[in-house]
Image 1 (cartoon, rainbow, N blue to C red):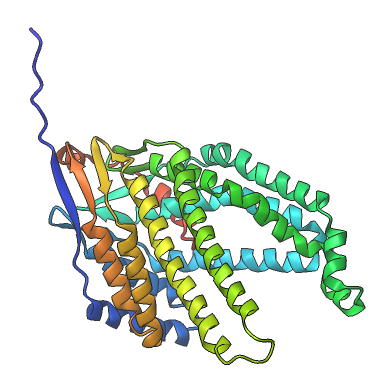
Image 2 (image 1 turned 90 degrees about the vertical axis):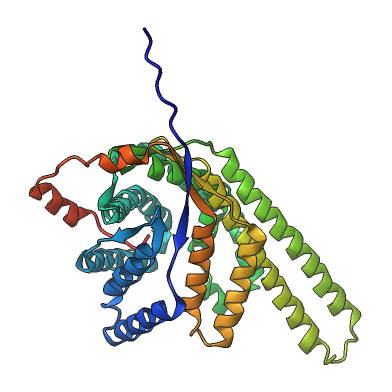
Length: 388
């Protein structure tokens, strides 16, 4: 006789953020002062204090998250990243002709930094005393990213070698010997890299997001990302085309105004053009809010943890307004309202995020595989926060 499985009750648990502006302000101002006094060394401890506050005030089902990182490991990661960046930047300045090679090296390091950083971040994040875990699949990371990043490097080389850099240089230097000494052909390598990278950003963002989510575990329940690359392109295209439309409209407005004024000095230029520029930047804040909402909703609504489904319903216009008003208040208060701005955003994002629960009790009861002390030591050595 076939056994009938009882129907699992589905619950929707809402996230909640309980932090307060003045509470975080006290942490923030101390972090700023000590970071300045220690020439940046305290920034690792500042990050731990900040993350501990935000994790500890993020609630789900009346339980909070925890951030457990050792600031010494964060400091080590930042020192290593700083040394690598200094060597990288210095080498580029000394041997600019080898710029393509340096870009290739940077792309080769990306998967390693991604895996190391995410392993550190997950291992030091916990909910109800169960740590998250990131499966360190370095080989898999290189398999995923080698082709797209290699293609970007190849296109960079093709753009750089195929572009009429001589004509561009002639137009820029205008037969001026002093300018010719300042502008070199090698200076166009990074521009070529950006041209090659821009069309691939949604693709790389998709690969990065899928790789991270599919390698995250809570207890023994693995996370899964359930969508393809096209939704990423839709999010980027919608916001990019909206930005182009806004830029075109405001560009035509400025051009019409400039062409319409007399050749003599017009005092209205000092007020109207800056006002148009300010309005343009204000609208771009709304567009950045639209991008954040579309991207976050798309990612969360396609993410499962075990049999449990994340849901997100952020409103792009609402986040745009939060961005804009926060920025205005921060400027007017010379940065002193930054803590309140962060708290405001965290509270809104949490209020729009839910977890549809089918089997949370089973996940809670699971324990991660035991690891010996040597394994933990090696994790501390190679899994660091590189500030990605």
